[in-house]
Amino acid sequence: MTRRLPALSCPVQTRRWQALCFDGEAWALLPTNPGADALPLLGLDVVADFGSALWLRARWRGDASRWGWRWPAEQHLWLRRGRDAVDWPLLRAALAQGRRWLGDGAPTDASTRG
Image (tube, rainbow, N blue to C red; front, side):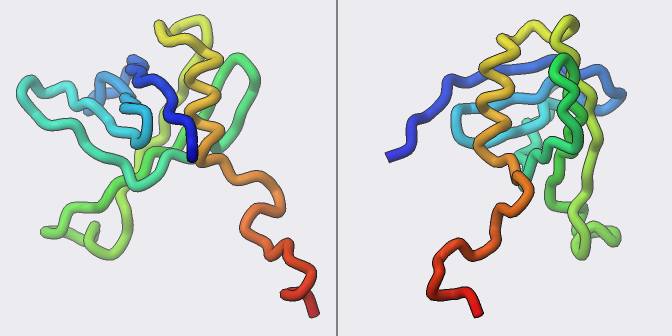
Protein backbone atom coordinates (compact mmCIF):
# COMPACT_ATOMS: atom_id res chain seq x y z
CA MET A 1 0.00 0.00 0.00
CA THR A 2 1.37 3.39 -0.97
CA ARG A 3 0.88 6.33 1.30
CA ARG A 4 -0.98 9.24 -0.24
CA LEU A 5 0.54 12.70 0.20
CA PRO A 6 -1.60 15.73 1.07
CA ALA A 7 -2.89 17.97 -1.71
CA LEU A 8 -1.00 21.15 -2.47
CA SER A 9 -1.18 24.13 -4.78
CA CYS A 10 1.90 26.03 -5.86
CA PRO A 11 1.61 29.41 -7.62
CA VAL A 12 3.43 29.73 -10.94
CA GLN A 13 3.86 32.93 -12.90
CA THR A 14 3.25 32.25 -16.56
CA ARG A 15 0.87 33.83 -19.03
CA ARG A 16 -1.30 30.69 -19.33
CA TRP A 17 -1.06 29.07 -15.88
CA GLN A 18 -1.61 30.42 -12.39
CA ALA A 19 -0.88 27.35 -10.26
CA LEU A 20 0.55 23.85 -10.25
CA CYS A 21 -1.78 21.57 -8.25
CA PHE A 22 -1.31 18.14 -6.71
CA ASP A 23 -4.35 16.23 -5.38
CA GLY A 24 -2.31 13.59 -3.57
CA GLU A 25 -2.01 11.33 -6.62
CA ALA A 26 -1.89 13.39 -9.83
CA TRP A 27 -0.62 16.78 -11.01
CA ALA A 28 -2.57 19.46 -12.90
CA LEU A 29 -2.09 23.02 -14.11
CA LEU A 30 -4.69 25.61 -13.15
CA PRO A 31 -5.30 28.07 -16.04
CA THR A 32 -5.44 31.82 -15.62
CA ASN A 33 -8.79 32.04 -17.47
CA PRO A 34 -11.66 32.17 -14.97
CA GLY A 35 -14.02 29.22 -15.24
CA ALA A 36 -11.57 27.06 -17.22
CA ASP A 37 -10.94 23.52 -16.01
CA ALA A 38 -7.62 22.40 -14.61
CA LEU A 39 -5.40 20.65 -17.14
CA PRO A 40 -4.38 17.13 -16.00
CA LEU A 41 -0.71 16.37 -16.64
CA LEU A 42 0.67 13.21 -18.22
CA GLY A 43 3.90 13.77 -16.34
CA LEU A 44 5.85 16.24 -14.27
CA ASP A 45 9.60 15.79 -14.60
CA VAL A 46 12.33 17.40 -12.54
CA VAL A 47 14.78 18.70 -15.13
CA ALA A 48 17.16 20.15 -12.54
CA ASP A 49 17.15 20.39 -8.75
CA PHE A 50 19.26 23.19 -7.29
CA GLY A 51 18.12 22.71 -3.68
CA SER A 52 16.37 26.07 -3.40
CA ALA A 53 15.02 26.06 -6.97
CA LEU A 54 13.44 23.45 -9.23
CA TRP A 55 13.25 23.41 -13.01
CA LEU A 56 10.20 21.31 -13.98
CA ARG A 57 8.79 20.06 -17.28
CA ALA A 58 5.01 19.60 -17.27
CA ARG A 59 3.60 17.41 -20.06
CA TRP A 60 -0.02 16.98 -21.18
CA ARG A 61 -1.83 15.49 -24.16
CA GLY A 62 -1.62 17.84 -27.13
CA ASP A 63 -4.46 19.45 -29.02
CA ALA A 64 -6.05 16.91 -31.42
CA SER A 65 -6.81 19.63 -33.98
CA ARG A 66 -3.11 20.35 -34.52
CA TRP A 67 0.12 18.37 -34.50
CA GLY A 68 -0.37 17.77 -30.78
CA TRP A 69 -2.11 14.45 -31.30
CA ARG A 70 1.32 13.06 -32.11
CA TRP A 71 3.45 14.75 -29.44
CA PRO A 72 2.55 15.79 -25.93
CA ALA A 73 2.56 19.51 -25.23
CA GLU A 74 4.88 20.76 -22.51
CA GLN A 75 5.62 23.77 -20.36
CA HIS A 76 8.80 24.44 -18.41
CA LEU A 77 8.32 25.93 -14.95
CA TRP A 78 10.71 27.39 -12.38
CA LEU A 79 9.80 27.07 -8.71
CA ARG A 80 11.81 28.81 -6.00
CA ARG A 81 11.69 28.03 -2.31
CA GLY A 82 11.62 31.69 -1.28
CA ARG A 83 8.80 32.65 -3.65
CA ASP A 84 6.36 29.75 -3.35
CA ALA A 85 3.76 29.64 -0.62
CA VAL A 86 3.66 25.84 -0.34
CA ASP A 87 5.73 23.86 2.10
CA TRP A 88 8.97 23.19 0.19
CA PRO A 89 9.67 19.72 1.71
CA LEU A 90 6.13 18.59 0.86
CA LEU A 91 6.51 19.78 -2.74
CA ARG A 92 9.85 17.96 -3.07
CA ALA A 93 8.35 14.78 -1.55
CA ALA A 94 5.46 14.86 -4.02
CA LEU A 95 7.89 15.32 -6.92
CA ALA A 96 10.14 12.52 -5.70
CA GLN A 97 7.39 9.94 -6.34
CA GLY A 98 7.79 10.19 -10.10
CA ARG A 99 11.45 11.18 -10.24
CA ARG A 100 13.74 9.09 -12.42
CA TRP A 101 17.21 8.55 -11.02
CA LEU A 102 20.22 7.33 -12.96
CA GLY A 103 19.70 3.62 -13.58
CA ASP A 104 15.94 3.55 -12.96
CA GLY A 105 14.06 1.35 -15.36
CA ALA A 106 17.02 -0.97 -15.87
CA PRO A 107 16.43 -4.64 -14.98
CA THR A 108 17.70 -5.44 -11.51
CA ASP A 109 16.86 -9.13 -11.40
CA ALA A 110 19.97 -11.29 -11.89
CA SER A 111 17.97 -13.74 -14.05
CA THR A 112 17.34 -11.04 -16.71
CA ARG A 113 21.04 -10.25 -17.15
CA GLY A 114 22.98 -11.84 -20.00
